[in-house]
Image (cartoon, rainbow, N blue to C red; front, side):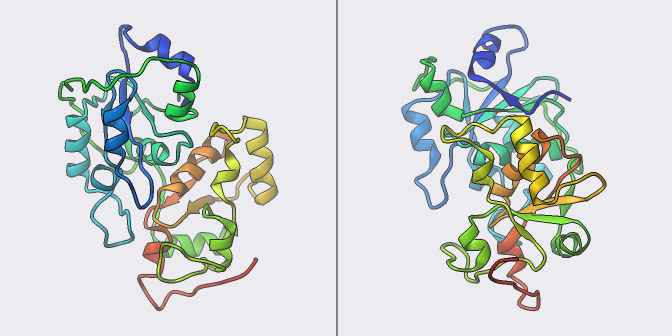
Amino acid sequence: MLTPLVTPATLALAMGASGEPVLLDVRWALGGPPGIEEFRLAHIPNARFVDLDRDLAAPPGAGRHPLPDAAAFGAAMRAAGVSSGRGVVVYDAGNSMAAARAWWLLRYFGHPDVRVLDGGFAAWIAEGRPVTSDVAEAAAGDFEPSPGHMPMLDAAGAAELARTGLLLDARAAERFRGDVEPVDPVAGHIPGARSAPTTENIDTSGRFLDHERLRGRFAALGVAPRVAVGAYCGSGVTAAHEVLALTLAGVESPSLYVGSWSDWIADPSRPIATGEI
């Protein structure tokens, strides 16, 4: 499998060449403003905008960003020009949180060649690469989603993994402890989970740490051979970033609890832990 990351320099070489990848701009921020506004101001040439809330999630229900229906996801990706036989590069503003959600979904639904622009739009701009406000016509793609190509957890699976393997909480440490909860109505974490803020997987520029540093970080958290590993967050967005970081560290088949904390607390019978481990 290809490396999940691509640098601005490598992407620039691929643009305009035979087999040029489809570029998806997935800039998004929790609480807004909508990323389409930034896209309209400037984006990488030939990129198409994909809305995380609309295209990369089902309507809120089983969590704030549930897994989208395969048919709806496929239609959104085809409208953005995605085809199974053509590579896809996804990017966001800079830290790859939203881009990782697009990467995970495309891989889950069976696309064989999806990569994240390391450092996102900020890295592209920092290297003086071209941008445009022109919106390119997107020829319809032919991508037909086939679910199940990435490991996924539901609430019961997350609870079991927290007991028998390693369940990582990708949120900020203060949310894990239950000190604050700025988004969801209940604070705390899944019992048995370990705090592993995914912001610690990137440097100050938003690029991922190198393989050795990621591997060392996850080893210190308990990642080891034959230990099943999964991740969750508030709604399944930053946890996808954790899964991407685990993949970069060489961890085999890390799982994602897509519903995450916002799904877990929807059932008041599920236990809640606070404080440190």
